[in-house]
Length: 28
Image (cartoon, rainbow, N blue to C red):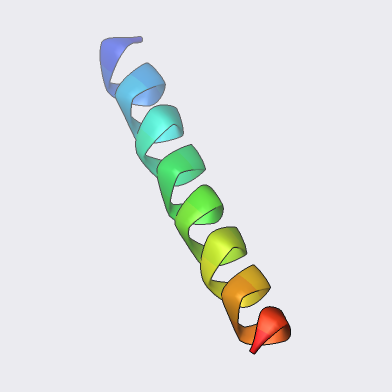
């Protein structure tokens, strides 16, 4: 379970990073 949980957190961080990057591109 710990592996799945940590993987989920890591995946969420990647999504948030991609989202912020996309937002920055739209603002430019």
